[in-house]
Amino acid sequence: MSSIDRNVVMLGWVSFFTDMASAMINPILPIFIVAVLHEGVDKLGFIVALATFVSYALRLFSGYLSDRYGIVKPLVAGGYALSALSKPLIGMTHSYQEVAALKALERLGKGVRSAPKDLMISSYSRSQASGKTFGFHKTMDIAGELSGILILFAVLWYFGQSEQVIRNIFYATLIPGMAGLFIMLFFVRDIPEEKRVSTYTFTLTADDKDTVLSLFFYFIFLLFAFSDAFFVLQARETGIAVVLIPLLFAVSAGIQTLTSYGLGLLIDRIGVKRVLTFAYACGAAAQGLLFLQTPLFTWIAFVFLGLFTVASLNANRAFISQHAKNRGSVYGVFYAGVALFGAMGAYISGMVWEYFGMNAALLLSFLGTLFLLLLFMVRREDG
Image 1 (cartoon, rainbow, N blue to C red):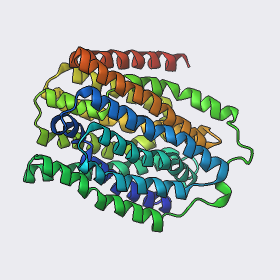
Image 2 (cartoon, rainbow, N blue to C red):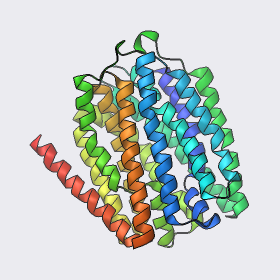
Image 3 (cartoon, rainbow, N blue to C red):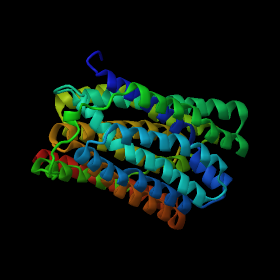
């Protein structure tokens, strides 16, 4: 790992602390909404859809700004500041509308920073090593998530699961959030000026457009794949205790931490398409295991969820780095597509679950992801 640029290492630590803060609240947020605020699953679906859309749609705009005007580090730092300050405020909410507004603000911060951050990582990546570089960064990202999950589990185990304990957890996220922001401000250098603007007269090139078209299969897959929030509700419905739910996320995060760097190396060696085939197979397996609706298979489903998440993100981010010219903007388009289809998928899942039951939602997700996996395998063989 000595070949990883120092700025990428520092960005890794920024992501470590930021994702620690996120992981301290993400496993309990669905429980907070449904059990503490007494809102329906359709309201949870609305919150997830809104947060997903805001998080990813803004990346299109921030990616464009990075390419067109060379604004990179200020967008990244501003995004981390928004996220760090909005998470603790969720602990003060008493309605799903308030949670939705603050979660959208927190995701706005992620939306503002993500495409410029990927541009920074790509700019500091060495030739023929984009998979390794993004794999390293994702390892730090998920290691922080795992740390936050274990902190959450320890707090719930020791202090209990009362409403006040849950609210105090939201307040405590201010500490790691501010640690990440401090590192971003004082230890990460902006990318060199000559690398900030891809073209003075901004247009998407033919290579950029071909790259975007290649990403659409992933977008469609996200339309059917369950988000983390619905994995949590399924776990609760199958009888897994609330105090153990953070450990489910620990399983997913642990798998991602262990495999991210290795998957990055595989991307460089065997190519993006083979790694994406593996990712889609893991995604379909995760949905199928949830459909079996037993605690043991739910635990295993989180393993495959972790593999799908890390393999698909590393592969797509490396693919953009390898093929796009206006990389900041294409990263923005990528995240905007994830926004649109992820938000629609979350909303549809919430509505189907609320009005037709969990079984119907699980069946739709499993059959959709399985069909897309088979289609991708046929297309890859033809290509």
